[in-house]
Amino acid sequence: MAYEYTNKKGQKYYLHSRTVTLRGSGKKQTIYYFAREVKKDAINEVPANMKVMEVERTGLPILKKK
Image 1 (cartoon, rainbow, N blue to C red):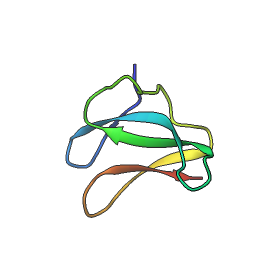
Image 2 (image 1 turned 30 degrees about the vertical axis):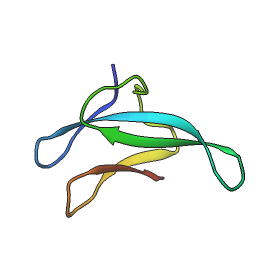
Image 3 (image 1 turned 120 degrees about the horizontal axis):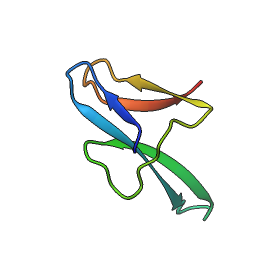
């Protein structure tokens, strides 16, 4: 089951991660994002060094480093 976050408006978002290759350097980096539906990249928990925050104006969830 994917990690689920409900914002102040009552909308549910699910946490996903994906490994991408950066254009300039060619390095691989893991990105994290929230989506309204569960996709194949969904993950079960928030990474240990991150915490979930909510953008005050829009209510969208984001991950920040602790």
